[in-house]
Length: 135
Image (cartoon, rainbow, N blue to C red; front, side, top):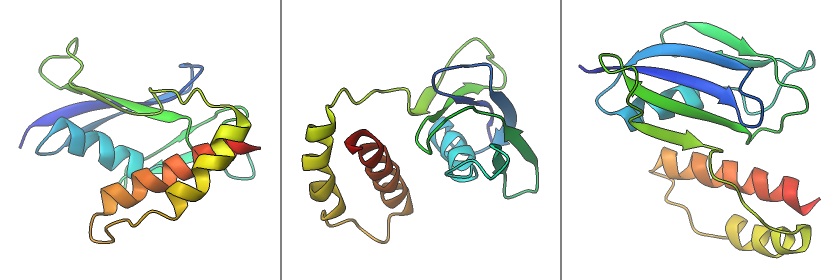
């Protein structure tokens, strides 16, 4: 199985970063595995825990970071300079609070395929980001 290097980082300040080497069929699967293993919100000590299914663990120490401000950059282990995919908050929603408030009920009311956990997780992350913007 191919091996990928996955950097998980806080969106605005790349000083909070952890790196894992992950075996997966595709770069997307490697990145999603790390994202799905990351706590949605920092704990009471402002630490965001990453706990992979194989037991490996790391923590990010983001300051004032919401649950949607993390992203991954995935590189093939044998080509460390080549970025295969970036997933997460690398894209930016440029919405006003009023626009986010109008869009949030549309998203939360959308029919999501319960059999597709990746779609459900992505919709949940987008809904949290919209909720933050709507404030």
